[in-house]
Length: 238
Ligand code: ATP
Image (cartoon, rainbow, N blue to C red; front, side):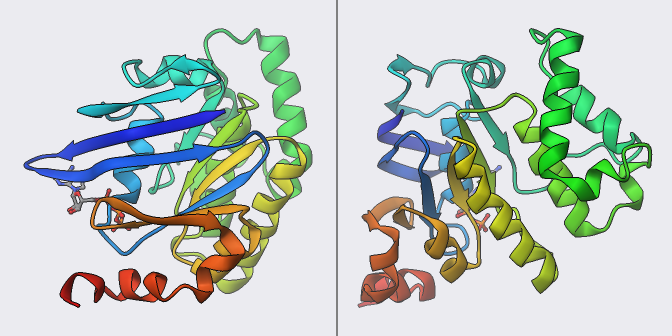
């Protein structure tokens, strides 16, 4: 459903991603692994239209999307939950979900989507009328993911959904992500908990210094010495 081909993304003076190719199949979880600064967020931003690649092409359901603004990509069924949870802390939990509904959604459909999303997030359902600012970090992160699900995306991009969470909140986020596949969404996941990420993913890509260095079944990646080299930053020195 998603095909990324030879994509190069510039961040300021540097090419943060160079010639990257990646595929996400319908209903699969794909992990993108790499050291800090390897280019993970830049690649995700290019995929969802937040950043325009300077080279390459990106197809989503057979349609070229790399020149589209992000709201058009969203309308085609892709949602991106970026690294720093973008929730509105002064709005209530319910209002945060309401504003995540898109302009093309009728208010009846938005209500139905909210009901469906809240079934997945009982903790949030209990706090609908409270301002998002009073939620714990884990609950705020859940709210960010719930917002991403309001459009019922075919592909959900999650950038560091467990950043700053307690071990318990992290574990529950991972089980939630694994369950989302059961609902039929494909997921492209970046998370610093490499072992947990690889345990729930079908396919994994390793990005090293802006380039895709490895790809294959996620469960095989922990045994590959290239993984440790890339994460420790020793590959370029050897
Ligand atoms: P992290 O895990 O630290 O978020 P990452 O793998 O997601 O890292 P990116 O955030 O994509 O990596 O960054 C890739 C490179 O681009 C890094 O060298 C980073 O310093 C640089 N970079 C990222 N954003 C910008 C920006 N807005 N302006 C200039 N350089 C940037």
